[in-house]
Length: 289
Image 1 (cartoon, rainbow, N blue to C red):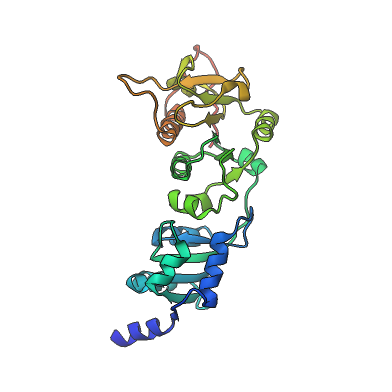
Image 2: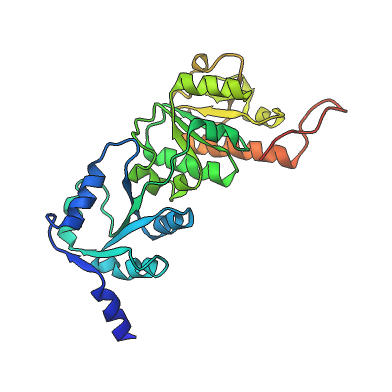
């Protein structure tokens, strides 16, 4: 057994300086601001394994000495051609700078990126985040959207250049690779939803209808959420849509957008499990998944 571990360790190329070609490659990828980068970084074992499950091609595995066992465990499920590197601690620190340093990560080849039309063509509701810029919140919403069967997530004015941003991949636990998440403009999104016949439901603190009313919508909807303090401006999405608020007690002014999205998605899923509140003889709920 010891001999096997030693042979596996020998397969990993040591990287002791940032001038090493393997380190320079990582640095270039981390610095890239391309909308469709050729390669991207995936941190942590679970996220790398999720990328593999989604058919993403892994180009190389990197780890500090402390995480070499994780790297080699993941490598066993990958083709032998995937390179392995062991980074000196100071090299890992230099590569990531002020960002969260990862003891284990992979360089992955960019998969095919979905477009807005692809999201709208899928079954299920569409989640639109308008002006939500905290990547941790976007990642959490993506996880909820995947958990509750949404068609995808559309990011408007997110500040992101690419949905393969290292922070978003990490915050979504790799699910940004499993569920279509796209960047789009507000007008582009609004027009595309109208063409697809998908009504808009906005969430904001001053809206007239309680969130539970979303259960009564008898077709797929676009759930539009904004930042935590102001919610979303309904004038930007048309006053004809459904305007919803989450009833709360006490002195709490608002909920985190990821919590609001999870509640809204849950209510929509609940519409499948119970009949809509409608007059007797009305058609059954038409809520495609």
